[in-house]
Image (cartoon, rainbow, N blue to C red; front, side):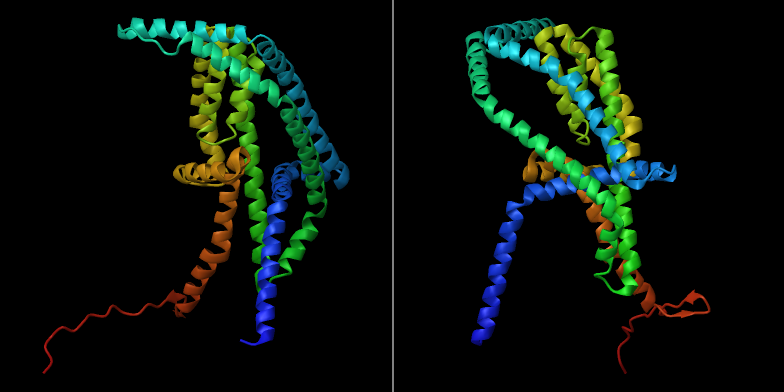
Length: 369
């Protein structure tokens, strides 16, 4: 190997490592960009609808994002104050929180003993008080860090909105540039592939948003009718966690039931009943339609990619795993499966509009003369 080849190979290795390191440092920006594109794909049909009503394209984008931010702000204002007040009350008086947990545990023990005719002790009262004190102490110490994380989330949200606006204004030119990197014969297929990916991501996000809205509002109405305190917060928790397919609703139901249990055991039962009733409609009518009309993935594959997403990127990874899996399936079909199918079809001779195949051949096993 010559000195020039050694230098070139070394330079390639250094540049590859530098690119990987730069990608690692900018992973958060890339995630924000991906989220911005997914949200922009979801709201683009509304932007086009407004544009067809003779509203300037830029103004239509601003109107859609303004409505989106106002809706989110109103929801947070309805949910956060009661939740913050309840949390602040527990932080200031951890004895009250421990007492509520002990009362709820006593109720559970009595019902279990009555049902199974056996004595049972779940947790020691002193252990509960010590655990609650430790948790509240850690929570107090982590409040500054949580405030910093909240500021970072606000910054990421603003950056997501800005990137989404820029993506919608420059979408066509970006797709034209990307398609120009391919040969003339493949440019139409590349444009169709990008359009299908955008349509899939948009329909998935809109479908999930519909499910989240229905589950949250339905649980809020039922919890309000049952007289459960903080129905807005509990409905919000159940609705938001439903954004995670299959497993998210159960996570939200457990959290909401435990929070309602701090008010009274009866409220916890009402919270669980409300979740079960709403889940019947969601599982049998809403979620199957969302999956069928968007990513079209097998439920087993959805669970697999969810766990992979959680292990790689936490909650954000879990939320992005399903749309990314749907995008990967589209890329696989357009770039590998369909070209292979066309290649096989082109290799089969055609005569008179009929595909000709080689006649069946039989192996001659008779002894040679």
